[in-house]
Structures are given as structure tokens and as C-alpha cells.
Image (cartoon, rainbow, N blue to C red; front, side, top):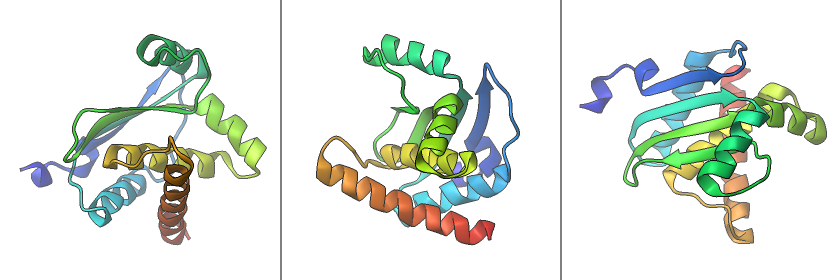
Length: 149
């Protein structure tokens, strides 16, 4: 049973072309797991790969045929449970944080939960989907902020 596998083995953090320390990585795992539980979807395996703009841009071109910079690309591998990869450009999240007037860590958390919500099944293509996605992001970010104090 997947529940018997430790959380740190089901949610793994990786770095590609850069390195930085995550604050409270175990707390982030618990937050992601709690989100999955609240959304009633099992969490099997999640890889979160932090990378550079250059790395993610190449992936965006290669796999999605989009010649643009982006902050996250989500690769889902299942529909009835969470199994997938989140590739996150730390360059983008840092720049977005400056633009949005928040900390780099806050923006990184927003992008992480955005990707998790995609894996759960939420979209963001239409204005209505974007409204729901933003509402869910804010809701789960408030839960994380309450935990972080």
C-alpha cells in the first residue's frame, strides 16, 4: 500500500542546474499531503524539480512546443491519484515575487500548490477555471501560512 511508503519517499525535491536550501521541506511535504487528502485524491508519487529559466525553456519548447518562459510545467502520469513531476523555474518565481511584491519563498509556494492542483485535476485555461484555481491556491496558501506562523 502506498500509505506505508514514507512521505519523504513519495514527495521528492530535486535540483537541476542550481542549488538552494528549502525551508521546512518536511512541512511542505505534509502540506501537499494534507491538500491531497482534503481534495480526496491519493498521493502516490510527486517529484518537484527546481531548475533555471534556461532548463525549463528547453523543456517547454521540446515537450509543449511553446517558445516562451514559464514558471512551471506539470507532467501528470495518472488521473485518479497524484503521480507526476513539477518542473519549476526558480528564476521565474524570483522575478515574479519582485513583480507581485511578495517574498521568493511565498511565490515558490504558490507555484508548488498550483502544480499540485493541476495534478489533482484543476485547469486554468478559461477565466472561470483561473478563478477557481486562484481561489484554491489562496485557500491552501492560507493553510500553509497558518502552519508556518
